[in-house]
Image (tube, rainbow, N blue to C red; front, top):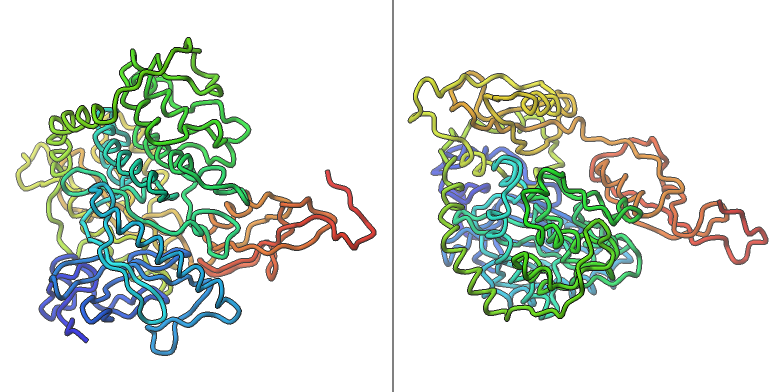
Length: 567
């Protein structure tokens, strides 16, 4: 095994024997995520496994180091916790009894999908995979590690929303990459403000690729879907997931960038899908063709939605005079009808040339925004209190230490009139802080949420720690980044009886549980609705992340003499 005693497992920098990393402030005493590979595990004799960054129903993502190329990498391990577990050595994978066939089929899907993504490595707008291998009775992929922040965080720190001109330069290159991917039959199915990353050069990339089994309900793996970005077909059993599914996620993410809010979840929009919920004042600032493109791309029903990215590109790129020639989606009743004309779209290469030309002019502005707020922060100033309260069984899904360090403005060059003393926000309700700052006509600072952590000492919803610390000086108008308590690491099972699968799964997921399903006959609950829990009942207290089984009604038992009455 490669000697890694001097490596920080959080950022892969040289620690030179220190207990606290001088680069990122990580403490070597912090435990690894539950079920993750031990720190320093060697793969293929060259890749060193660092801290687990996040996990879902498909597997676990780690930061790592390639000792041959001497570069920081991202390691993705296929580890579906609903199907397998670690052996006694803590490294190898053992399939749980009865899941052998499903595990092998799902592993095959993971490898096949990884190879498809690897073939797309020439697309600069997606995170490339450059190694795929099997080891420890499972499989791994190796990707580039790029310092980045999520689109969600970027929008929050950019004032809560972006202008169309700024959003266009970020989204259009990704749209082009998605169009190429879709032409090759490759779907993402998880496009959201979390899977879209802003790089240090100001460009946006798409990452977090996962097999389709975790991008929909009612499969053998727990779902990983972002409410507001998941299309209705991802909640519906048996519905095909097509290019239009990715169009929905992409358009929802663009909607978020422009408004600061995600669309209402598709499950709740299905009975009110003709309304385009863009604030009136904001809609007035957007070109009419962009409003039309958003409405078309966010249609709930897939057959009424923009079908492909080339069509979406045409609608987003068109000037108003060109937009009038585009055939309007019949279901967009909120927009005035346009006379039907022959579509006379410009060739694809023209759009590419125009986009590239504009990108060269605007990219400098985006890069300037990126670096405007970057200043190093004392590495020990974040997470010192939060780390003491985090459950040893739950780890943060994303390390934001370096992001926060880049967010804060430099106070050393500011005049004394521009400086304020940082207030003490610890123990205050996060929602009340936001309301207070939003209500101020001239706020002294803004509030940004870094992450939520479990705490047995700080009430849910209250601030655990902050950067910069209370009493320090900061530039007026800068951001205070806070860590907020999720409360104790237990949750109460919500009432789910008679709800639809989508509604029940959403309630269970919102409480922090992992829903799986089993089918059972019932003469009291309509087919497709939830009977209840298999081994629990509403009101039971379980650990965060616990798997709960939802019993889905198949209707009356055909052998039963009673048919039951459904209302």
